[in-house]
Length: 108
Image (cartoon, rainbow, N blue to C red):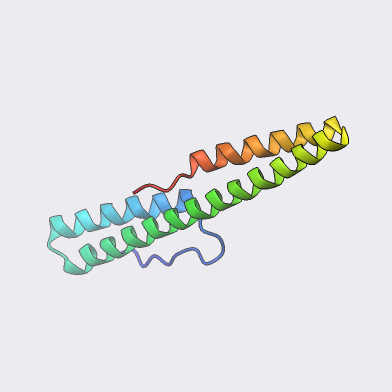
C-alpha cells in the first residue's frame, strides 16, 4: 500500500502526476489480487496526486497572471518615459506570463 502524504511545501505538477499514476497502479493491483485495502489506498493516492497537480496548475496560472500584469505596467511606463530597456523587459515579462498561463490553463 502507498501511504502517500501530499507535499506540504509547494504543490508540484510532476509529483502530483507521479502519485496519480502510482495510485492507479496500486488500485489495479488491489483489483487483481482482491485486496480492498490496496484498492482503497490506490484510490486515495490517485485522488491526492490529482489534487496536488491541480493546485500546482492553479498556482502557476496565477503567477503567470501576475507576471503579465507587472510586465504590462513596466512596458507602458517604459513607453511613456522613453525608457526602451524598461519597455522591452516589461514586454518580455508579459509574454513569459502569457506562456505560463497557457501551459497551466485549468482543465475541466
